[in-house]
Image (cartoon, rainbow, N blue to C red; front, side, top):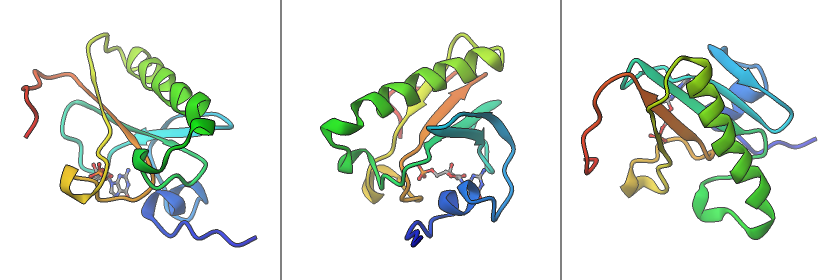
Length: 115
Ligand code: 5GP
């Protein structure tokens, strides 16, 4: 099978590089960010290689809902009932890894608007 997902998250999904996993199911994986920006900083990624939210189609609706529910589950599991979810879409918005991911941040006061 050809897998063109040569992003770092593709490599994590294939087990080629390690991650500090906090949750996994058949649709997604959640693990701690390598460079945490808050005491809680987890990334939730789909197993399907979706480049960004900008590429999502109607058929991804259930998957996207699932990723949000997993974000909330992980935050709860980690002991946080206040948290922020962030999806950077495109380089100008700060996306550096081109495999859709939700950031789950918590454990400190977070400013608004974001930078
Ligand atoms: P983006 O900037 O695309 O929204 O977020 C990408 C995130 O992936 C960054 O917060 C970055 O720290 C994280 N990251 C990049 N490479 C790795 C890695 O190899 N392992 C983990 N756990 N996180 C990574």
